[in-house]
Length: 212
Ligand code: AMP
Image (tube, rainbow, N blue to C red; front, side, top):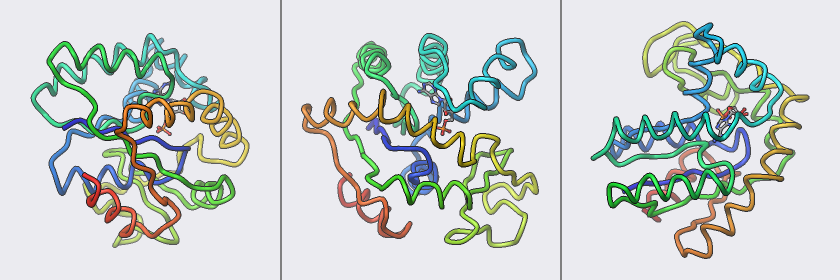
């Protein structure tokens, strides 16, 4: 079963994805993680991406689609949880097309519903494991041992460069202009579940599990 997580930055997609991966064995496909890896690699493409990510703009669809296709092919046969993709209608159409090639399709889409004001608080309290991508909130979901990742024991817990107020505004603008229309797109197909993403981490997981 392939699932999409849709929602504004810092709405909790990454955290819930990690939990579902542990519970159901999904392959977690986060385009943000893929792009950050490329950006850190020092390649020419990586350096171009770094500028885009630090502005909070969207990376070129052609490039993201290419990365997605490669990952889908690599994990064909797995259930995939798409986190941060699609972010635009043309990406959603591309995803349909790629999955159809192996008789696959998106069966469930979860929309993380949350107000803009709450996102800023979450962004300011968020730290991320540079090695495995695990996400923490210093107030509501800190690592069990300070400075150490629960998932991979790395001490590389960092604040993402794009997790600040100015860049959040830009990321949210792109969400409103490009991504939010996907809510309607999937609603019309009858596969959308709207989650109350203001709820506690456990309650959001419960909503997802009940709908799967
Ligand atoms: P995320 O980790 O999902 O918050 O994504 C971080 C950044 O990666 C975004 O602000 C965009 O710059 C870029 N990005 C992630 N997914 C996509 C996508 N599907 N299309 C274009 N850019 C993306």
